[in-house]
Image (cartoon, rainbow, N blue to C red):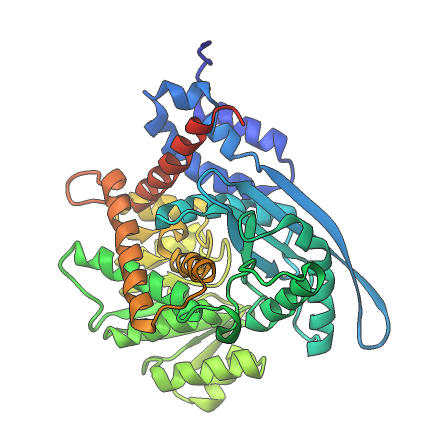
Length: 451
């Protein structure tokens, strides 16, 4: 077998940039993984000769399609939809569907790439994929959202299946949207199967799926603190976002004895020095989910808080931070500010919320820092358990699922330690997560030959 000349990291990344012009989010995601993987691959000729990282960084396929729908005024509207199927070496493609104006092919490729490693870390047989549309559900009526979801699924259904690709929800896609899409899939195919996760409990969904991503991020945070002989009791937490992940992360922090100081949305953040307790979290859930309100209205309900328009919460002194909103919300200067203000640990609830400068800052200062592919894997883990329940035509009790989620997050934490322990008491969780996820996918790819 011919031996391939080893390209260095810079040469590899130049190739990625050349093949993916105008896709900065995807290039950033590949760079973050490649920085760690190149050292790991140094003495492993089979990974080089079989071009494994090059193949993982090229999606199996990117499906793009037109989505036409009619609004309540009878106007024809046109959106673009995608499904990125990145890698199915260890199981069916698995990853969410996102409806948001910021959705582009680059964003979905980065998410599918990250999802490949995240799913591998769970220990469950799931490959990596992601999909979505630049459709904005905000301000749309329920019937408009239904018509869009049905039109979206009319195109998507030919590319998915319980043993092919199993989408879930994401930003802009909750239980309601999953229901509309599942109904359309069933109508078209006359097939009741576990083709989507995040379903309602009445028709194949799993308990604790709603809570899983936020809870999992906090379980991972607790595991990191435990390596230092600490827990969350009495610790202050700064959290971004105010959706499903953020509110459930806040809920679990409170349950474990911590004090949540902030939540945010695209308009700014609220700071409540008295702490955002369970009553206040419940208010936010109702206000944001059912009334589609803005976080700034929190200060009217709870006058002790302040609202900071157009800003992120990273300047608020805290013990721990959980970015739970969206990609690249925590920049290099924000990371420096968090460290300077005494932040000891960061657990990402969102996908790639920290930019590369921020990642390098956290690593340089050797704080406890969990990348999203490890710390926010709880959601897809319970989605994987939902797939298992659908296949077996059964459901598990909440306490069983809570224990499985804790065990999975603990297993991911242990994998990160295995490959990320740098000695001297420092664990590079980014390196550990990247290598552990890569090795599982890469070894499966080697077993299949050149496909």
